[in-house]
Length: 215
Image (cartoon, rainbow, N blue to C red; front, side, top):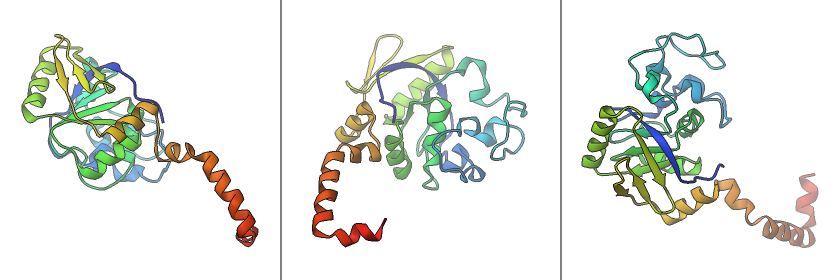
């Protein structure tokens, strides 16, 4: 998993509450279990005027010019600004996969669905909970200033605005550590690779028949 470092990113505003995971990445794209390749189909039903299918070339599909991610001013956005209860619905891990594959590193919202919130940290996406009035203020500022960008500093748990003001945010220390170090569940396990090898070697001595059975 890519390490989460301090970065400055353009903010794209998704001004709707209760965005569910089927809207983030529709069900027909769940056949793949790879973590990559979902970016072109992020918010598929909102971005395009036709129905997308797995493996389809999206280059020439008719786009919805009114959808925020299709507007030139938000090209290259890496911070998504959303409303309450973002990521509700099913538990599909494809939702954070699609967001990160598109290029988003952070989602700002007043609240998140629990499973999406947990899945995000495990896939290099930082969900930040901010008060409703702060989110509302950011929506207004993004609308008023083209190219509005925020600096996300996870190490110091700060969001720096273009005017120099700072928004502090909370994050679980263990999840913060994993993001900064680029550790997903597999990466965490592999930190103990030597201990695992030593345990397996010891078990081969005490219970060799177990290993004969799995050859």
